[in-house]
Image 1 (cartoon, rainbow, N blue to C red):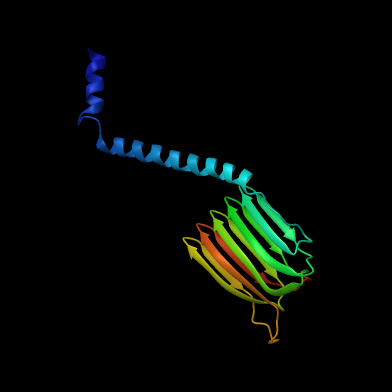
Image 2 (cartoon, rainbow, N blue to C red; image 1 turned 90 degrees about the vertical axis):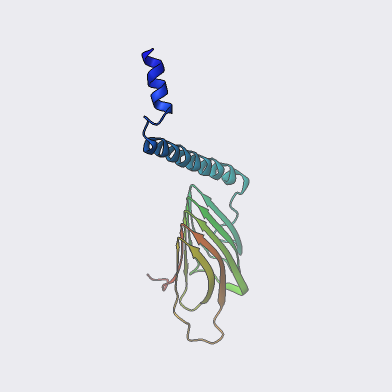
Length: 168
């Protein structure tokens, strides 16, 4: 009889409503994050990265890992970069830029850092939602400076583009 009354108390108004709400939120949160990480593992296998230091075009995917490349491409055309719970660092200071070079970037709970030479012009239309975008490249003095166009998004993550001389 005692166990029946305890069970009745848990289901009726005697059980605090705040505890039921807290338990529901906790279960939802755990399920959400478990689903996010399971999806990330599946995506990592479905979308492998392509490109290395000599590649003129890259397709970099960092899902729950990190990628670092120091490019020496002779005619870098761009490509795509996507990070999800991961990070990508690309140094383009030794690369030569092809005309109409374009990078498509996406960052979801991750980060992308791109380093370019100060002689390049960078045109960015990267949008951020609860994340950040920082393009700190000074305007080059030459009118015909090579131009890298960057488009994409950062949601709960970040994209940073910076210019430093090679000797730094």
